Amino acid sequence: MVMVPDGEDVIDVQAALKKENADRIVAIRLSAAPRARERVIELARDTDIFIYDAQFTPEEYLGQTNGPPKVGWGHSTFVEGANLAKLANTSKLVLFHHDPAQDDDAVLEKEQRCRELFPATEVAWEGLVIELS
Image (cartoon, rainbow, N blue to C red):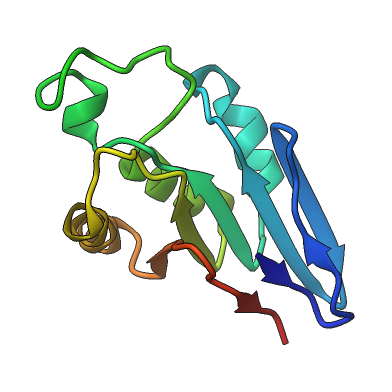
């Protein structure tokens, strides 16, 4: 959950949401498909927080580990999230929608690998609250 200064929860069940409040901007991208790349960059442009569906590692996405390729499944990787965050000039990237097959160590490894590409990265976890001040 993201809390903006007026205490309003920002929750979305649609494909994308951009919330502006009190000079803070949050963008959330759910079920990120590569074909929407330019629209996602515009959604995330100059945001304080960009929350991104990074369900798979690049290796999982390409089918090099953990089963068949996931290309076209409607999800993405932390690498694409980092690339989009850079192109959109966002301040912080939050990775969410982790693959249920990934244990906590795998999710933390994904966070560390993403920080090598985009240092201001954090992984979401159940109960996480980010306050914008």
